Length: 399
Image 1 (spheres, rainbow, N blue to C red):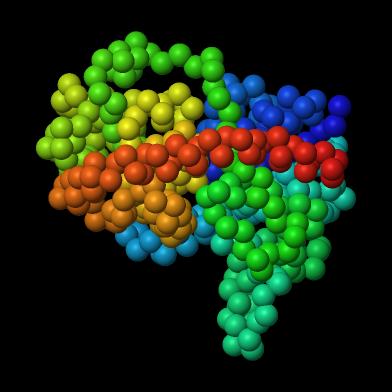
Image 2 (image 1 turned 90 degrees about the vertical axis):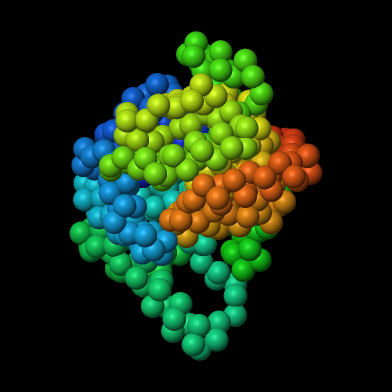
């Protein structure tokens, strides 16, 4: 049986796509090991995927909340987050190297974990990219000025990886393209959601979104009763934005009041610290982790942070969005949903007000049927792409 290792760092949204891919590869007869933060051990193993602890034992959701709380500027927040992740990647290379030994293929994550270690060990690789902005435009003609600016930016992005390369006595990389696999770069995005960049090299391929139907999932009685007894609720799910370093009652209160004033029932994920001191009305329920495949199509719209996984889920399961992006890559996802005609204008994640939430809900209700029909049609096309099967086919070619 061929052995595959893959690695990922970050919040649940950064881990979930790799769990889906690992499950599909296991179904196709591979022996897959997924390495990540020790805090994700239960999530990964409960998905019937082998787990390897990589890097320091930290509460990644808490760390993400601290970074978000200290940096209100979206660019600064993203850079601080990237630097934090890069530091962990550098610190984790010894664990990654040991885990790579004896593998037949390394699936290199969007953070390039495993790329250098696989190079040292002579193991073939396949890349996965979640943020398409990180893919080099190698086929684009460059002006002299663009070459200078682009070269500087590329060098900055490559810098943390060159720390790892130096440890293994490899020559430094000028840009991320020198680190990425030349076999395939699998992009788990639908061609119906985003256009492929014509300046990418051919090995960067859209596979379609990755998702699994979690048919065995059973909700608790409270959630089951709430969903069955009443109109379809609004889903409020802000991902890492709702991981709280301290209670943010003012933000939670703005959403609750907006839902009450617009007559909406609501399912609320996150805000754990705020909810300890807050009594929700009977028309709303607070929940923990629930599979997207169970929850999303039982709600009439999603108010979300536009993380990669959540944005994909709104399209896969066919519900319109009110975007509340916090950092730059989330703004890119919000822009995608708006251009597709399945979302309202965005709410700035750093400036959430009751008035703005009410305005977006009213706009959604005014144009709901048009947006709902668009997203349902997209959902059918996206499901027919079978993104995971396509990804496994590419991996079969290499291995």
